[in-house]
Length: 219
Image 1: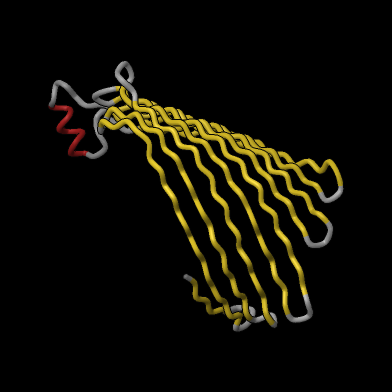
Image 2 (image 1 turned 45 degrees about the horizontal axis):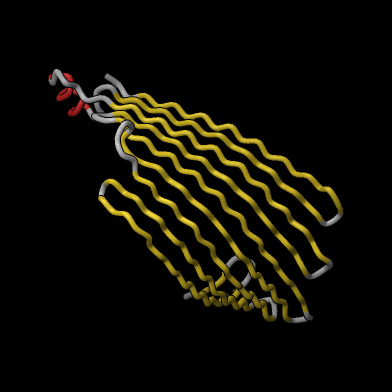
């Protein structure tokens, strides 16, 4: 009896510059992970299952595929615009005493705008962004009723970074998240909708002692 595992990953990425101050990055990846343990994971379980006529065995397989694109556009000396789109598909199967499957698909996109300005002893960067996402998951035992879980949501955020006299860095920000869930679960049994709201403030200060050391505090 032995345990075996195999994983393979393929990744492709390219960058295109269609115009001055504009960059497009595209990437795609595919990952497969397979593992099998015919007798168990430890010597004790191997010996126990060898003596048991109904010896336990397991097989797991994960397949994950992702694709994404990012557009970066520099607008003059002070403004930068970044937009992205991503998609992901995750499919897994496990066979032990039953056959369990999971299929998850997600899509997301976002837009971020940054503004920078600088004076002789002061510089500042402001970042404002918006994110949207959608997740759909199906899980359960193949051949039986499956659980459905869907999520739609988004987030908005702002962050300000101020650097003073080449020594002090002050940071303040705020992020708001909202997610709407639509659930139809078989175990535990539940059918209905859920709402999540998250508010995340942020404040920080950093003092640059020298080129090698700094002191910071954050909340």
